[in-house]
Length: 317
Image (cartoon, rainbow, N blue to C red; front, side, top):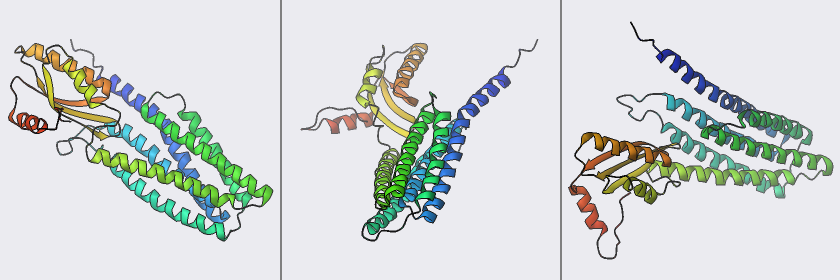
């Protein structure tokens, strides 16, 4: 008698789970993109620099939300023989392009804001207020649909939307101030402040992106703790030639040589599984472990270089 096939049901459930996680992100992306278009048009027509600056902020978050959605989508795709890591690094390429683009946009807004301090321009506070209110409502809806998720990408997206919500509130306050007092200086002042925040955020994104491209160890994973966790597994005599890097924002990769003179294949496999299990604590989902009982030549050379006078022994990471 044929065994019942549960593969189809499982794949359907898996697909349904991923789609349910994607829906809030897709809605947030659509709403944020709508705000971006509205604020760019509204900023141009009203003469409001703060709206234009907030529009640039929305563009930054459209890309950030898109990267979160892209990370989910790429996680579902299997690697191919020619693309063994899939398309995960596209996330980093998009982040670099986004960072560079927004640095340029922010610089232009800052220059215009500085010029307006000496030569004030009229601002249509009514149109400015209307567009900012639309942005506030749309951001509130995005925050509501993203709130409460335990998914790392969605939680990150929620924080971006909260930032957008506060930014929209600031523009509303500026529009009301202009309407009540006629003092338009608050508009370039707020535009300047938003642009500076975007600049800091963009430099931070670029710095983290280049850390990943240069295959530095992730900031939040102490390599000494990783090595200690591996060496604490019974049967492991030592760990060396450790390399830890980040494939993209949510995937850490490690390879290492493991001293283990256990000859029984089944026991060695159990040791390997226990090491991999402990690595999961550090969000290391991909690891390559080479077991050896004798010191390899490349590790001996590294050890001799590290133990030269004036240098203490350290693990290679």
